[in-house]
Length: 299
Image (cartoon, rainbow, N blue to C red; front, side, top):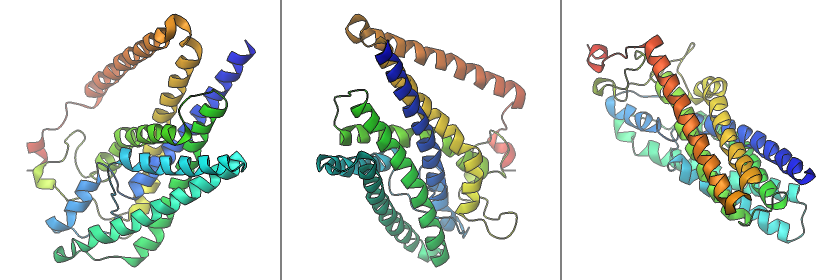
């Protein structure tokens, strides 16, 4: 009984760490304009819309975060093997992985922006200085929290996967959660807030992102401020629930039916969330619809 209570406590702590990681990941992604919304940021200068939005998409969020978390976990794992304190090892691993993230971000921004020079898009030095450091700060939080929950799975719950492999798996999951949950707040609600609700992005509006803030030209810090209130917490709750429910069902039901108990509970959870999602979608359509037709917004 005591062992189950302890495991549930670790599960709750891992879920809390995942919530923090998910929130930080989404804000990092939206400030850096990585993931789904970045295509419109990249397209804007080609359509004649010069902007001051950071444009650093290194890869899709799942593989990028899989790399950074696995790198941080691998370095921490190596330091732990050298009998270094686990907390210090995780801090060092997260710090070095964040440095790699900063290098990738800088080179990606410079390379992408230089490729748009023929369309008149300049490289803003102040944008590099201010945005890169902010994305690195959020990246450090997300990497540290995720590597820590991976370590808890190894040290406290006895998970058989080595730390770097756990980091790769949960890093991909972290990037997927932010891309699917948080990015719409930036790409559809903030970046295209001039479009009517549900209109999507008509062909005539391609690249015509909102480029001006309440005072002066909009930059990625404005987008980060917006998503830190909405998209970040939503992504955090998403990733936190994924980690918590995954560990919770494993801790309580894995010994039932030679592991089939945990699988059955997982399927039931998926069905429950599917029903909830469908209910919310229908409710939104009834209260905010019908969705605007694209041809109505392009007239």
